[in-house]
Length: 356
Image 1: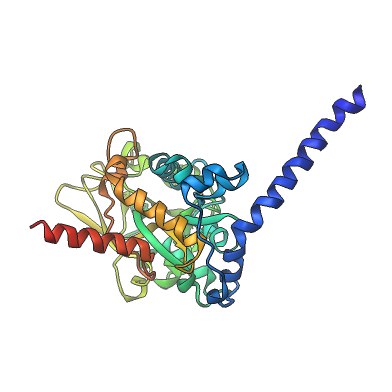
Image 2: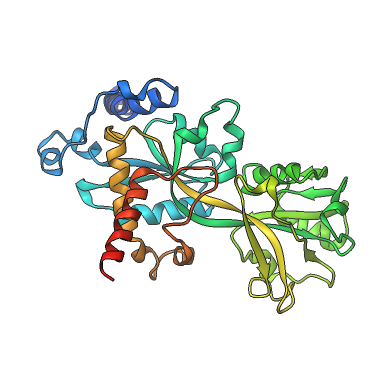
């Protein structure tokens, strides 16, 4: 009796493994071929079955017919929340099923999109492509953008004795814990600006407390996230603590966008009428650049059609307020738009023009 009970987990795992082996190859063949730079034109066209056909098929084929994987991010981050909300709104039964995937974050999501089985789309920070330029020289041909989701503004918050970016040279600057947007994009931006600082990667709460007390030589903290940041809205700082201006220049225009911080964002730190110039890292919904005749392209194209058509639902109550500011037509520096997304925009622009 004990032997029979003990064998059940093994039987379950064996059955589950067999199911995965039978499903995964159909999901990954096109991706592996395309990601490794082989001739995409040699792939055979294998359109996804029509919903009626899928319903008659075996459960395995039916459940995979119009399913796509969407790499989101860490559980505590905004990207996975956006991925989950998109999945909820575009869901269409057997006609479309989006699976949000918890991952290591927007930078690692590029790797997932290129190589992880079953991933068709991902949420990334645009400058994370910089890391892949050497290992994948044509990275910007393999990835296309669907939607510029929201900007993550650069906040360089400093002690009263720091007056400019140049004053930070050689001083201790915190970029939050490893794996966060600040830990990746912050040092990259500082390097492009020619700023050589002593980098630390500790929780921002700890670094801010050190700054307040003047301990440990902490001169600045760098946040890269959507404004307003709760730590600065609710925090109480002595006079002189401030955000530094970060000018937008030629060194930054390949991945970044100009932005500002003002009193509406941080009334306790910025005077009415004043604006602090900074830059923003676009957070984008991107897709693998599947051949347009492939099964995987057809799935993502349907996802785009549903998402663009239902964006007003995401702008309504019950969803992240940032959806209200998302513009379908906004571009992402350094990337081309997914063809089906561009076709949707062109079609609706023509319809709008014809109705005038």
